Image (cartoon, rainbow, N blue to C red):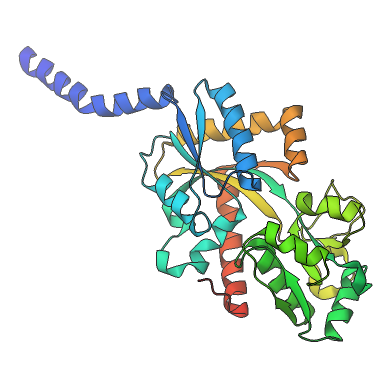
Length: 328
């Protein structure tokens, strides 16, 4: 009988060993260097924020966090690499707000951010600013609406590549304001800027940090930021939501940066990664560097990120459908 009892205890212990080992591995996370994948080329806003987060994660987690740039398909290539990784928190994705758009824009890829990755944290937000060339004589959003209505279909705007938040924000503005402006596609902000600075297109929407030097020089006139609140970088520029145009009340389409891991990453690993984001955002040097990138620290929990996606994904899907946006 005693032998049977001992055998039973041993059997139970053996059956628990995988779970005990998994818990031990989770408790000692991270056990090796972490790879943080960025779905865009070096030097862009997502890459800059990602490198800052990777640097601080390295300091706080005691393991090196290596940034791995894997551009393509507006971030889907990078997202799929993370989705295929082991769900242990050693492979992460940092993405901009395009992550909430690409599933609706590239339907043939069958990528669904709400289904395919584990939300970890919101890191920061970044406002976009709507500007015009001085030759238009326009200085406010209501004046732009009147200007565009008097020149239906003849006012052109640029907003980086098709399908970005910048592009879709302007399409949303057009629909709400009841104006007709022609979208001129570019391969990126760098190729758009010469045309808006030269007056070949009249309107542009892009990252505050990118456009601030041209605003300060007087080469471009800022009309409004697209976020619900004003930007600390351009405190004198109103938000579209406060422009006095009733249809624009509540307008809020700012960019944001977020972190994901492979689906079914252990909750305590996700919590550790999230806790460290909140901790690093409290450090003055981190906040100052983010502000220098044009971003405002605004950490959020995995639940906050799920809610953000639940709001953003259907909103952008509707804009894409209403504007009949297609990418090649």
